[in-house]
Image 1 (tube, protein in one colour):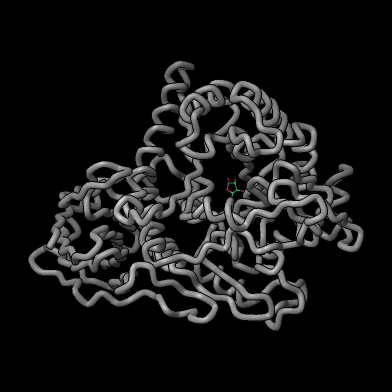
Image 2 (cartoon, helix red, strand yellow; image 1 turned 30 degrees about the vertical axis):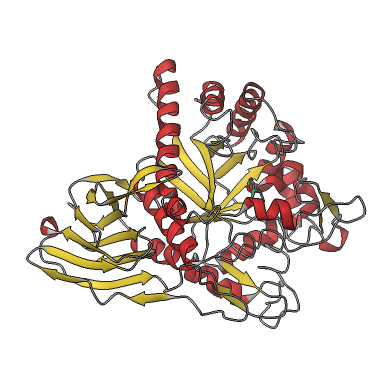
Length: 504
Ligand code: AHR
Protein backbone atom coordinates (compact mmCIF):
# COMPACT_ATOMS: atom_id res chain seq x y z
CA UNK A 1 0.00 0.00 0.00
CA UNK A 2 1.45 3.44 -0.93
CA UNK A 3 1.99 5.85 1.96
CA UNK A 4 2.34 9.59 2.39
CA UNK A 5 3.27 11.85 5.27
CA UNK A 6 2.16 15.47 5.55
CA UNK A 7 3.07 18.24 8.00
CA UNK A 8 0.89 21.31 8.38
CA UNK A 9 1.59 24.41 10.43
CA UNK A 10 -0.81 27.38 10.56
CA UNK A 11 2.16 29.73 10.94
CA UNK A 12 3.69 28.70 7.65
CA UNK A 13 1.52 30.37 5.04
CA UNK A 14 1.45 30.95 1.27
CA UNK A 15 -1.10 33.75 1.21
CA UNK A 16 -4.75 34.61 1.74
CA UNK A 17 -7.17 32.54 -0.33
CA UNK A 18 -9.13 35.18 -2.23
CA UNK A 19 -12.82 34.45 -2.75
CA UNK A 20 -12.24 35.14 -6.44
CA UNK A 21 -10.35 31.83 -6.54
CA UNK A 22 -13.77 30.15 -6.83
CA UNK A 23 -15.01 31.99 -9.87
CA UNK A 24 -16.62 30.48 -12.93
CA UNK A 25 -17.29 31.39 -16.53
CA UNK A 26 -20.47 31.77 -18.60
CA UNK A 27 -19.98 32.10 -22.34
CA UNK A 28 -22.63 32.47 -25.03
CA UNK A 29 -21.76 29.02 -26.33
CA UNK A 30 -23.91 25.98 -26.96
CA UNK A 31 -26.58 25.52 -24.27
CA UNK A 32 -24.75 27.46 -21.57
CA UNK A 33 -27.11 30.45 -21.56
CA UNK A 34 -30.06 29.48 -23.79
CA UNK A 35 -31.57 26.14 -22.70
CA UNK A 36 -29.17 26.29 -19.77
CA UNK A 37 -29.54 28.97 -17.14
CA UNK A 38 -32.24 30.70 -19.27
CA UNK A 39 -35.23 28.70 -20.46
CA UNK A 40 -38.53 30.59 -20.49
CA UNK A 41 -41.32 28.04 -20.36
CA UNK A 42 -39.41 25.61 -18.17
CA UNK A 43 -41.55 24.51 -15.19
CA UNK A 44 -39.10 26.17 -12.74
CA UNK A 45 -38.50 29.35 -14.82
CA UNK A 46 -39.12 32.65 -13.06
CA UNK A 47 -40.75 35.73 -14.62
CA UNK A 48 -37.47 36.61 -16.37
CA UNK A 49 -37.06 33.13 -17.86
CA UNK A 50 -34.30 31.92 -15.51
CA UNK A 51 -34.50 28.35 -14.24
CA UNK A 52 -34.83 28.19 -10.46
CA UNK A 53 -33.44 24.64 -10.30
CA UNK A 54 -30.24 25.91 -11.97
CA UNK A 55 -30.08 28.93 -9.65
CA UNK A 56 -30.31 26.59 -6.64
CA UNK A 57 -27.47 24.40 -7.91
CA UNK A 58 -25.26 27.38 -8.77
CA UNK A 59 -25.78 28.69 -5.22
CA UNK A 60 -24.83 25.29 -3.81
CA UNK A 61 -21.71 25.24 -6.00
CA UNK A 62 -20.49 28.41 -4.29
CA UNK A 63 -19.16 30.33 -7.29
CA UNK A 64 -17.92 33.85 -6.70
CA UNK A 65 -16.77 35.93 -9.69
CA UNK A 66 -18.29 34.98 -13.06
CA UNK A 67 -16.47 35.81 -16.29
CA UNK A 68 -18.85 36.82 -19.12
CA UNK A 69 -19.77 36.73 -22.08
CA UNK A 70 -16.77 34.80 -23.53
CA UNK A 71 -14.43 33.21 -24.43
CA UNK A 72 -14.01 33.00 -28.16
CA UNK A 73 -17.54 34.39 -28.50
CA UNK A 74 -16.50 37.82 -27.20
CA UNK A 75 -14.05 38.39 -30.05
CA UNK A 76 -16.96 38.93 -32.48
CA UNK A 77 -19.51 40.34 -30.03
CA UNK A 78 -21.19 43.73 -30.31
CA UNK A 79 -22.36 44.52 -26.78
CA UNK A 80 -24.92 47.07 -28.09
CA UNK A 81 -26.85 44.19 -29.68
CA UNK A 82 -27.65 42.74 -26.28
CA UNK A 83 -29.21 45.77 -24.55
CA UNK A 84 -32.52 47.60 -25.05
CA UNK A 85 -35.96 46.13 -25.80
CA UNK A 86 -35.60 42.38 -26.35
CA UNK A 87 -37.92 42.35 -29.36
CA UNK A 88 -35.68 44.74 -31.31
CA UNK A 89 -32.37 43.00 -30.57
CA UNK A 90 -30.71 41.57 -33.69
CA UNK A 91 -30.06 37.90 -34.34
CA UNK A 92 -26.35 37.68 -35.18
CA UNK A 93 -23.95 35.09 -36.47
CA UNK A 94 -21.53 33.86 -33.83
CA UNK A 95 -18.53 32.91 -35.95
CA UNK A 96 -16.58 31.42 -33.05
CA UNK A 97 -19.03 28.57 -32.46
CA UNK A 98 -20.89 28.71 -35.79
CA UNK A 99 -24.19 29.45 -34.04
CA UNK A 100 -26.95 32.03 -34.09
CA UNK A 101 -26.98 34.49 -31.18
CA UNK A 102 -30.52 35.72 -30.46
CA UNK A 103 -29.34 38.35 -27.92
CA UNK A 104 -32.20 37.63 -25.53
CA UNK A 105 -29.78 37.57 -22.60
CA UNK A 106 -27.33 40.47 -22.31
CA UNK A 107 -25.67 42.61 -19.69
CA UNK A 108 -28.92 43.57 -17.91
CA UNK A 109 -30.39 40.08 -17.79
CA UNK A 110 -27.11 38.44 -16.80
CA UNK A 111 -26.59 40.97 -14.06
CA UNK A 112 -30.07 40.28 -12.75
CA UNK A 113 -29.30 36.53 -12.79
CA UNK A 114 -26.13 37.19 -10.76
CA UNK A 115 -28.28 38.81 -8.09
CA UNK A 116 -30.55 35.76 -8.06
CA UNK A 117 -27.60 33.43 -7.44
CA UNK A 118 -26.58 35.49 -4.43
CA UNK A 119 -24.64 38.44 -5.78
CA UNK A 120 -21.67 36.83 -7.51
CA UNK A 121 -19.29 39.39 -8.98
CA UNK A 122 -19.45 40.16 -12.71
CA UNK A 123 -16.11 40.03 -14.59
CA UNK A 124 -16.58 41.39 -18.10
CA UNK A 125 -14.50 40.71 -21.19
CA UNK A 126 -14.24 43.31 -23.96
CA UNK A 127 -13.95 42.49 -27.65
CA UNK A 128 -10.38 43.21 -28.78
CA UNK A 129 -10.78 40.83 -31.74
CA UNK A 130 -13.03 42.55 -34.28
CA UNK A 131 -13.28 45.75 -32.22
CA UNK A 132 -11.01 48.05 -30.23
CA UNK A 133 -10.43 50.79 -27.67
CA UNK A 134 -13.43 52.95 -28.62
CA UNK A 135 -15.99 50.17 -28.18
CA UNK A 136 -14.35 49.11 -24.91
CA UNK A 137 -14.67 52.57 -23.37
CA UNK A 138 -18.23 52.89 -24.64
CA UNK A 139 -19.16 49.65 -22.88
CA UNK A 140 -17.36 50.89 -19.76
CA UNK A 141 -19.30 54.17 -19.92
CA UNK A 142 -22.57 52.24 -20.32
CA UNK A 143 -21.73 49.94 -17.41
CA UNK A 144 -20.05 52.19 -14.85
CA UNK A 145 -20.80 55.91 -15.33
CA UNK A 146 -23.52 56.86 -12.79
CA UNK A 147 -25.53 59.31 -14.96
CA UNK A 148 -25.54 62.34 -17.23
CA UNK A 149 -23.91 60.93 -20.38
CA UNK A 150 -25.46 59.51 -23.49
CA UNK A 151 -24.64 55.88 -22.71
CA UNK A 152 -25.33 56.05 -18.96
CA UNK A 153 -28.74 57.60 -19.74
CA UNK A 154 -29.36 54.83 -22.26
CA UNK A 155 -28.63 52.29 -19.53
CA UNK A 156 -31.07 54.05 -17.22
CA UNK A 157 -33.70 54.12 -19.97
CA UNK A 158 -33.11 50.38 -20.38
CA UNK A 159 -34.17 49.88 -16.77
CA UNK A 160 -30.96 50.24 -14.81
CA UNK A 161 -30.49 53.72 -13.28
CA UNK A 162 -27.64 52.62 -10.99
CA UNK A 163 -24.36 51.62 -12.63
CA UNK A 164 -23.30 47.99 -12.85
CA UNK A 165 -19.96 49.09 -11.37
CA UNK A 166 -17.96 46.23 -12.89
CA UNK A 167 -14.48 46.16 -11.32
CA UNK A 168 -12.67 43.39 -13.20
CA UNK A 169 -12.24 43.47 -16.99
CA UNK A 170 -10.50 41.11 -19.41
CA UNK A 171 -8.76 42.84 -22.31
CA UNK A 172 -9.89 40.40 -25.00
CA UNK A 173 -9.69 36.62 -25.01
CA UNK A 174 -6.89 34.24 -26.10
CA UNK A 175 -5.49 36.70 -28.62
CA UNK A 176 -2.50 34.39 -29.22
CA UNK A 177 -4.74 31.69 -30.74
CA UNK A 178 -4.94 31.47 -34.56
CA UNK A 179 -8.63 30.42 -34.14
CA UNK A 180 -9.43 33.71 -32.43
CA UNK A 181 -11.26 36.38 -34.46
CA UNK A 182 -8.78 39.25 -34.76
CA UNK A 183 -5.85 37.09 -33.61
CA UNK A 184 -2.69 39.20 -33.29
CA UNK A 185 1.02 38.96 -32.63
CA UNK A 186 2.19 39.56 -29.05
CA UNK A 187 3.59 42.96 -30.12
CA UNK A 188 0.32 44.07 -31.72
CA UNK A 189 -1.86 42.75 -28.93
CA UNK A 190 0.41 44.21 -26.23
CA UNK A 191 0.18 47.68 -27.79
CA UNK A 192 -3.60 47.46 -28.25
CA UNK A 193 -4.13 46.14 -24.70
CA UNK A 194 -1.96 48.94 -23.30
CA UNK A 195 -3.82 51.65 -25.23
CA UNK A 196 -7.20 50.21 -24.26
CA UNK A 197 -6.25 49.81 -20.59
CA UNK A 198 -4.99 53.42 -20.43
CA UNK A 199 -8.22 54.71 -21.98
CA UNK A 200 -10.36 52.62 -19.62
CA UNK A 201 -8.42 53.91 -16.63
CA UNK A 202 -8.90 57.52 -17.80
CA UNK A 203 -12.59 56.82 -17.37
CA UNK A 204 -12.44 54.66 -14.20
CA UNK A 205 -8.95 54.63 -12.62
CA UNK A 206 -9.48 51.84 -10.10
CA UNK A 207 -10.48 49.09 -12.51
CA UNK A 208 -8.73 45.74 -12.24
CA UNK A 209 -7.53 44.75 -15.70
CA UNK A 210 -6.44 41.39 -17.09
CA UNK A 211 -4.12 41.07 -20.09
CA UNK A 212 -4.42 37.89 -22.16
CA UNK A 213 -1.70 35.37 -21.47
CA UNK A 214 -1.26 32.29 -23.64
CA UNK A 215 -4.31 30.18 -24.43
CA UNK A 216 -2.31 27.19 -23.17
CA UNK A 217 1.19 26.36 -22.01
CA UNK A 218 1.50 24.15 -25.10
CA UNK A 219 1.30 27.10 -27.52
CA UNK A 220 4.54 27.57 -29.50
CA UNK A 221 4.58 31.23 -28.41
CA UNK A 222 4.13 30.43 -24.68
CA UNK A 223 6.55 32.38 -22.50
CA UNK A 224 7.57 34.78 -25.23
CA UNK A 225 3.93 35.89 -25.52
CA UNK A 226 3.73 36.69 -21.78
CA UNK A 227 7.08 38.51 -21.81
CA UNK A 228 6.24 40.69 -24.81
CA UNK A 229 2.64 41.42 -23.75
CA UNK A 230 3.69 42.35 -20.20
CA UNK A 231 6.56 44.48 -21.48
CA UNK A 232 3.91 46.62 -23.24
CA UNK A 233 1.26 46.50 -20.51
CA UNK A 234 3.11 46.16 -17.19
CA UNK A 235 2.02 49.53 -15.79
CA UNK A 236 -1.49 49.25 -17.22
CA UNK A 237 -2.76 45.88 -15.98
CA UNK A 238 -3.05 43.96 -12.74
CA UNK A 239 -3.29 40.40 -14.01
CA UNK A 240 -2.03 38.14 -16.76
CA UNK A 241 -4.42 35.31 -17.66
CA UNK A 242 -3.73 31.56 -17.75
CA UNK A 243 -5.94 29.02 -19.51
CA UNK A 244 -5.54 25.23 -19.21
CA UNK A 245 -7.68 22.20 -20.07
CA UNK A 246 -6.80 18.59 -19.38
CA UNK A 247 -8.24 15.28 -20.60
CA UNK A 248 -7.56 11.57 -20.28
CA UNK A 249 -5.89 10.55 -23.55
CA UNK A 250 -5.44 7.05 -25.00
CA UNK A 251 -6.49 5.42 -21.73
CA UNK A 252 -3.48 6.87 -19.86
CA UNK A 253 -5.27 7.49 -16.57
CA UNK A 254 -2.01 7.67 -14.60
CA UNK A 255 -0.78 10.70 -16.57
CA UNK A 256 -4.21 12.33 -16.51
CA UNK A 257 -4.46 12.07 -12.73
CA UNK A 258 -1.17 13.97 -12.48
CA UNK A 259 -2.45 16.95 -14.54
CA UNK A 260 -1.91 19.28 -11.57
CA UNK A 261 1.85 18.77 -11.98
CA UNK A 262 1.49 20.50 -15.35
CA UNK A 263 -0.68 23.24 -13.84
CA UNK A 264 1.92 23.88 -11.09
CA UNK A 265 4.64 24.21 -13.71
CA UNK A 266 2.46 26.47 -15.87
CA UNK A 267 1.74 28.88 -13.00
CA UNK A 268 5.38 28.90 -11.86
CA UNK A 269 6.52 29.70 -15.42
CA UNK A 270 4.04 32.58 -15.86
CA UNK A 271 4.95 34.01 -12.45
CA UNK A 272 8.68 33.76 -13.31
CA UNK A 273 8.08 35.52 -16.64
CA UNK A 274 6.04 38.31 -15.01
CA UNK A 275 8.76 38.76 -12.39
CA UNK A 276 11.41 38.85 -15.12
CA UNK A 277 9.59 41.75 -16.79
CA UNK A 278 9.26 43.41 -13.37
CA UNK A 279 13.05 43.16 -12.90
CA UNK A 280 13.84 44.44 -16.40
CA UNK A 281 11.50 47.42 -15.95
CA UNK A 282 12.69 48.07 -12.40
CA UNK A 283 9.05 48.06 -11.31
CA UNK A 284 7.83 47.73 -7.75
CA UNK A 285 4.46 46.43 -8.83
CA UNK A 286 3.66 42.70 -8.84
CA UNK A 287 1.46 41.16 -11.52
CA UNK A 288 -1.04 38.51 -10.39
CA UNK A 289 -2.41 35.52 -12.27
CA UNK A 290 -6.05 35.35 -13.30
CA UNK A 291 -6.47 31.65 -14.09
CA UNK A 292 -9.68 32.50 -15.88
CA UNK A 293 -10.22 29.25 -17.78
CA UNK A 294 -9.39 25.87 -16.25
CA UNK A 295 -11.08 22.49 -16.31
CA UNK A 296 -11.13 19.01 -17.77
CA UNK A 297 -12.19 19.18 -21.44
CA UNK A 298 -11.88 16.65 -24.25
CA UNK A 299 -11.17 19.21 -26.98
CA UNK A 300 -10.60 16.51 -29.59
CA UNK A 301 -14.13 15.18 -29.11
CA UNK A 302 -15.48 18.70 -29.79
CA UNK A 303 -13.42 19.02 -32.96
CA UNK A 304 -14.36 15.59 -34.31
CA UNK A 305 -17.97 15.15 -33.14
CA UNK A 306 -19.56 18.47 -32.19
CA UNK A 307 -18.30 21.15 -34.56
CA UNK A 308 -21.08 22.89 -36.51
CA UNK A 309 -20.38 23.83 -40.14
CA UNK A 310 -22.27 24.98 -43.28
CA UNK A 311 -23.14 28.42 -44.66
CA UNK A 312 -26.87 27.74 -44.18
CA UNK A 313 -26.59 26.08 -40.79
CA UNK A 314 -26.50 28.46 -37.80
CA UNK A 315 -28.38 26.79 -34.93
CA UNK A 316 -29.41 28.57 -31.74
CA UNK A 317 -27.93 26.86 -28.69
CA UNK A 318 -26.68 23.61 -30.27
CA UNK A 319 -25.35 20.86 -28.01
CA UNK A 320 -21.64 21.76 -27.91
CA UNK A 321 -18.89 20.77 -25.47
CA UNK A 322 -21.32 18.76 -23.34
CA UNK A 323 -18.64 16.61 -21.74
CA UNK A 324 -20.01 14.02 -19.34
CA UNK A 325 -17.56 13.81 -16.47
CA UNK A 326 -16.22 10.71 -14.79
CA UNK A 327 -15.12 10.21 -11.18
CA UNK A 328 -11.52 10.51 -12.42
CA UNK A 329 -12.39 13.86 -14.03
CA UNK A 330 -13.82 15.02 -10.69
CA UNK A 331 -10.65 13.90 -8.90
CA UNK A 332 -8.53 15.88 -11.38
CA UNK A 333 -10.71 18.98 -10.88
CA UNK A 334 -10.17 18.60 -7.13
CA UNK A 335 -6.43 18.29 -7.74
CA UNK A 336 -6.35 21.37 -9.98
CA UNK A 337 -7.98 23.29 -7.12
CA UNK A 338 -5.17 22.00 -4.88
CA UNK A 339 -2.67 23.46 -7.36
CA UNK A 340 -4.47 26.82 -7.38
CA UNK A 341 -4.53 26.92 -3.54
CA UNK A 342 -0.80 26.14 -3.47
CA UNK A 343 -0.29 29.32 -5.52
CA UNK A 344 -2.70 31.51 -3.55
CA UNK A 345 -0.07 34.25 -3.23
CA UNK A 346 -0.09 34.85 -7.00
CA UNK A 347 -3.29 33.26 -8.32
CA UNK A 348 -5.79 35.68 -6.85
CA UNK A 349 -8.60 35.08 -9.32
CA UNK A 350 -9.67 31.93 -11.18
CA UNK A 351 -12.65 30.72 -13.20
CA UNK A 352 -13.77 27.15 -13.66
CA UNK A 353 -14.71 26.97 -17.35
CA UNK A 354 -17.64 26.72 -17.57
CA UNK A 355 -20.84 26.59 -15.45
CA UNK A 356 -23.94 25.14 -17.14
CA UNK A 357 -24.08 22.46 -19.89
CA UNK A 358 -20.83 23.53 -21.60
CA UNK A 359 -17.89 21.63 -19.98
CA UNK A 360 -19.90 22.25 -16.86
CA UNK A 361 -20.45 21.02 -13.32
CA UNK A 362 -24.20 21.53 -13.85
CA UNK A 363 -26.23 19.89 -16.63
CA UNK A 364 -29.81 20.53 -17.70
CA UNK A 365 -32.36 18.99 -20.02
CA UNK A 366 -34.85 21.29 -21.81
CA UNK A 367 -38.17 21.00 -19.97
CA UNK A 368 -36.49 18.45 -17.69
CA UNK A 369 -34.21 18.22 -14.67
CA UNK A 370 -30.88 19.79 -13.72
CA UNK A 371 -28.16 17.74 -12.05
CA UNK A 372 -24.62 17.74 -10.64
CA UNK A 373 -21.71 16.29 -12.61
CA UNK A 374 -18.83 14.61 -10.75
CA UNK A 375 -16.79 17.81 -11.02
CA UNK A 376 -19.43 19.69 -9.02
CA UNK A 377 -18.47 18.05 -5.72
CA UNK A 378 -14.79 18.99 -5.26
CA UNK A 379 -15.50 22.53 -6.42
CA UNK A 380 -18.44 23.05 -4.06
CA UNK A 381 -16.62 21.62 -1.04
CA UNK A 382 -13.35 23.45 -1.70
CA UNK A 383 -15.19 26.74 -2.17
CA UNK A 384 -16.94 26.16 1.14
CA UNK A 385 -13.95 24.96 3.20
CA UNK A 386 -10.89 26.75 1.76
CA UNK A 387 -11.12 29.87 3.90
CA UNK A 388 -8.36 32.00 5.41
CA UNK A 389 -4.75 31.41 4.42
CA UNK A 390 -3.32 28.68 2.23
CA UNK A 391 -0.58 26.83 4.12
CA UNK A 392 2.88 25.72 2.99
CA UNK A 393 2.39 21.99 3.34
CA UNK A 394 5.31 19.55 3.66
CA UNK A 395 4.63 16.34 1.74
CA UNK A 396 6.58 13.10 1.59
CA UNK A 397 4.87 10.64 -0.69
CA UNK A 398 5.53 7.43 -2.56
CA UNK A 399 5.84 8.11 -6.28
CA UNK A 400 4.90 6.60 -9.64
CA UNK A 401 6.01 7.08 -13.22
CA UNK A 402 3.87 8.78 -15.85
CA UNK A 403 4.35 9.10 -19.60
CA UNK A 404 3.44 12.80 -19.63
CA UNK A 405 4.73 14.28 -16.36
CA UNK A 406 7.68 12.06 -15.33
CA UNK A 407 7.86 10.67 -11.79
CA UNK A 408 5.16 12.21 -9.60
CA UNK A 409 3.88 11.81 -6.02
CA UNK A 410 1.01 9.36 -5.54
CA UNK A 411 -0.63 11.84 -3.15
CA UNK A 412 -1.18 15.54 -3.55
CA UNK A 413 -2.29 17.90 -0.80
CA UNK A 414 -3.16 21.50 0.06
CA UNK A 415 -4.39 22.98 3.33
CA UNK A 416 -5.94 26.20 4.54
CA UNK A 417 -6.35 27.71 8.00
CA UNK A 418 -8.82 30.34 9.10
CA UNK A 419 -7.50 32.15 12.18
CA UNK A 420 -10.92 33.69 12.83
CA UNK A 421 -12.82 30.43 13.23
CA UNK A 422 -9.82 28.23 14.08
CA UNK A 423 -10.84 25.88 11.28
CA UNK A 424 -8.38 24.02 9.10
CA UNK A 425 -9.16 22.28 5.82
CA UNK A 426 -6.99 19.60 4.22
CA UNK A 427 -7.54 18.55 0.61
CA UNK A 428 -6.01 15.28 -0.57
CA UNK A 429 -5.84 13.29 -3.79
CA UNK A 430 -4.84 9.66 -4.20
CA UNK A 431 -3.60 9.13 -7.76
CA UNK A 432 -2.97 5.38 -7.29
CA UNK A 433 -5.03 3.47 -9.83
CA UNK A 434 -5.86 0.43 -7.77
CA UNK A 435 -4.47 0.81 -4.27
CA UNK A 436 -5.66 2.60 -1.17
CA UNK A 437 -3.11 5.04 0.25
CA UNK A 438 -2.74 5.79 3.93
CA UNK A 439 -1.82 9.37 4.74
CA UNK A 440 -0.63 10.59 8.13
CA UNK A 441 -0.86 14.31 8.81
CA UNK A 442 1.25 15.83 11.57
CA UNK A 443 -1.17 18.35 13.09
CA UNK A 444 0.64 19.08 16.35
CA UNK A 445 1.00 22.76 15.39
CA UNK A 446 -2.81 23.07 15.32
CA UNK A 447 -3.19 22.18 19.01
CA UNK A 448 -6.26 20.21 20.09
CA UNK A 449 -8.48 19.62 17.07
CA UNK A 450 -11.22 17.21 16.04
CA UNK A 451 -12.47 16.07 12.65
CA UNK A 452 -15.61 18.05 11.75
CA UNK A 453 -16.14 16.30 8.42
CA UNK A 454 -14.34 13.96 6.03
CA UNK A 455 -15.77 13.63 2.52
CA UNK A 456 -14.42 11.58 -0.35
CA UNK A 457 -15.20 11.49 -4.06
CA UNK A 458 -14.59 7.93 -5.23
CA UNK A 459 -16.25 4.96 -6.89
CA UNK A 460 -15.35 1.35 -7.64
CA UNK A 461 -15.51 2.44 -11.28
CA UNK A 462 -13.21 5.45 -11.86
CA UNK A 463 -15.18 6.14 -15.04
CA UNK A 464 -18.62 6.21 -13.41
CA UNK A 465 -20.68 9.29 -14.36
CA UNK A 466 -23.89 11.10 -13.51
CA UNK A 467 -26.21 11.19 -16.52
CA UNK A 468 -29.80 12.19 -17.29
CA UNK A 469 -30.85 8.60 -16.64
CA UNK A 470 -28.72 8.19 -13.49
CA UNK A 471 -28.38 11.64 -12.07
CA UNK A 472 -27.14 10.60 -8.63
CA UNK A 473 -24.97 7.62 -9.54
CA UNK A 474 -21.89 9.41 -8.13
CA UNK A 475 -21.70 11.58 -5.03
CA UNK A 476 -19.57 12.34 -2.00
CA UNK A 477 -19.11 9.65 0.65
CA UNK A 478 -18.29 10.11 4.32
CA UNK A 479 -14.74 8.89 4.90
CA UNK A 480 -15.01 6.91 8.13
CA UNK A 481 -11.26 6.25 8.33
CA UNK A 482 -10.19 9.74 9.45
CA UNK A 483 -8.98 9.53 13.05
CA UNK A 484 -6.78 11.67 15.29
CA UNK A 485 -4.38 10.34 17.94
CA UNK A 486 -1.28 11.88 19.55
CA UNK A 487 -1.18 14.94 17.29
CA UNK A 488 -1.45 12.84 14.15
CA UNK A 489 -4.37 12.50 11.78
CA UNK A 490 -4.58 9.29 9.80
CA UNK A 491 -6.83 8.82 6.80
CA UNK A 492 -7.10 6.12 4.16
CA UNK A 493 -7.73 7.34 0.62
CA UNK A 494 -9.39 4.95 -1.86
CA UNK A 495 -7.73 4.59 -5.28
CA UNK A 496 -8.48 7.45 -7.71
CA UNK A 497 -10.07 9.66 -5.08
CA UNK A 498 -10.32 13.22 -3.78
CA UNK A 499 -10.89 13.93 -0.08
CA UNK A 500 -11.65 17.04 1.97
CA UNK A 501 -11.12 17.09 5.74
CA UNK A 502 -12.41 19.85 7.95
CA UNK A 503 -10.79 20.19 11.38
CA UNK A 504 -11.73 22.43 14.27
O1 AHR B 1 -14.19 27.46 -22.71
C1 AHR B 1 -14.27 27.12 -24.07
C2 AHR B 1 -13.30 27.90 -24.94
O2 AHR B 1 -12.01 27.55 -24.60
C3 AHR B 1 -13.33 29.41 -24.78
O3 AHR B 1 -14.28 30.04 -25.56
C4 AHR B 1 -11.96 29.81 -25.23
O4 AHR B 1 -11.51 30.97 -24.61
C5 AHR B 1 -11.10 28.60 -24.93
O5 AHR B 1 -10.34 28.22 -26.00
